[in-house]
Image 1 (tube, rainbow, N blue to C red):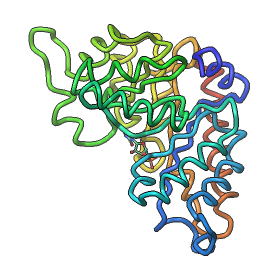
Image 2: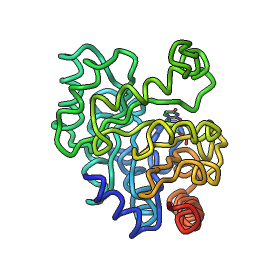
Image 3: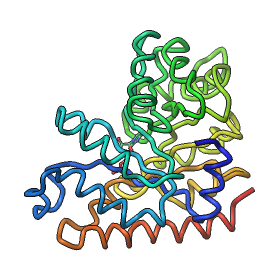
Image 4: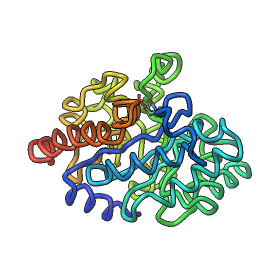
Length: 273
Ligand SMILES: O=c1ccn([C@@H]2O[C@H](COP(=O)(O)O)[C@@H](O)[C@H]2O)c(=O)[nH]1
């Protein structure tokens, strides 16, 4: 999917919502467990319920690979079920020496046909570039993450450049790929840093996890993160998919997604540059 296609979807749905499919066999409603593939049945119902409000879906790969072959199978079926014109993110946080990264890229872009994959930047250029060799595919590089541990490394100051390590990641990586193939993860819990991030990357899309269960503010993210083509994909996983663990789980997920979409629609009117 191109950047233009993505912006068109955002405009037509008045939404920049990404629904996170962090599907945990121990958390899904009990009545699904006697189905042949409970994970897929759950995802299918969530996708049906939220597809009018979401422009992207983000399965977190850990939840699937933890289940072995059956998890990969559920993931493939889920990916195929996501409607066309919807952006797909494999949240895999990969990255290794070049030849290994090439194989990760093939796994998610060729074998599975995701639009994008999240990549950890700390092994540097040769670990990221293999992912950038695929036409109309996206690398979503971890910029400043939503967790407390982000302070261990990402916020360290680089004295001679007078900036933080996460800013250096965002600036340096723009030498490797364009804003048509590179996005950055910025945690919603770090909305205070969005002005800095936007200074370093004015045109790029940002994937922003951390609203909902982690408490990030959608309004702050939208106010400080939006650019003239929106430039935001805001993810909520648990806050949507586990709104209820009863028979009404899909209906409740729909309500949660719709609530976020309606708020986003307001912010698009208010903050779109
Ligand atoms: O900085 C980051 C990077 C990735 N994530 C992932 O996003 C979702 C968030 O889930 P919620 O249930 O909405 O909190 C999850 O898959 C994380 O692994 C992140 O939270 N922060």
